Amino acid sequence: MLLRVRVTLPDRPGTLGQVARTLGVSGADIVQVVVLERLGGRAVDDFTVVWPGAARVERLLAGLAAIPGVRVDGVWRAIGAPTTTGQDAELLAQVAANPADGLATLVDAVPGLLAADWAVAAVVPVDWASRSGGGGATVGHASWRAPVPTRLPEVTPLRGRSMTTPDGTHHAIAPFGRAGLVLVVAREHNDTLCAANFHSTEVDRLTQLVRASAVILGDRLDLVGTPPVVAGP
Image 1 (cartoon, helix red, strand yellow):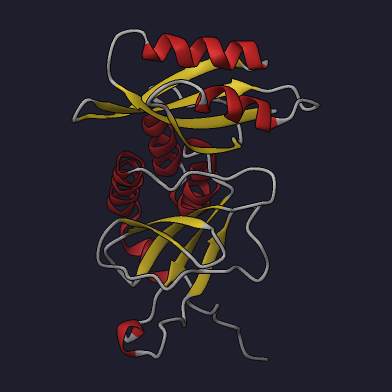
Image 2 (cartoon, rainbow, N blue to C red):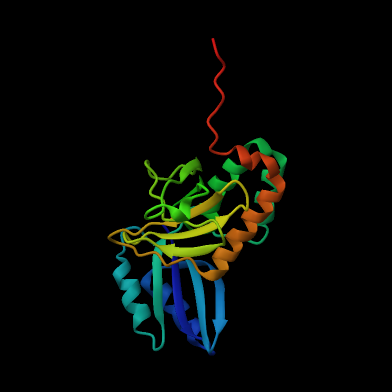
């Protein structure tokens, strides 16, 4: 299976090589490395690896934990192929080519781009902040892996952000800037793998995709979540 492994490590020569060797010895085949952050002598890297299904992930975690200064932030199953440059532009081109299905196209594609489990476009009511405990959001479009009923966090449409709900599910949320519409992306927690929270670079990427899609789709977004008009007899 395809796994995403997020590691925080000292930003010094040799440490990345130690991590890569440990992944290989543990049985992982590295297919991609993405540097998410370099700050204060530390780096945050995402490794996408092919992992033999019969092998125990604990072996991998133990090997990485033995490297001085290395911390594993999360290991979770990745959906789809590793991300490559140009995928965001290609997605926006698809949205522009077929705007009638543009929002559904965006929602279906984002989980694969961000190694997430599912995504939904939700409409948040204007009085959300005044409601007890939030809530009241309705789902306009959902990706195929989204749970039914969809478990939405108490979202606010003001800015892109990440958050974790009490059940351990990580979310990235980005507003479209109109009609109370937000895009919610989720990584779920399970008993065998523990996903990392969405990094700020991933939230920024989602926010840029959502803003660009909002410009492309325009007034179509105002109709999301609106009940269809039923013709009279």
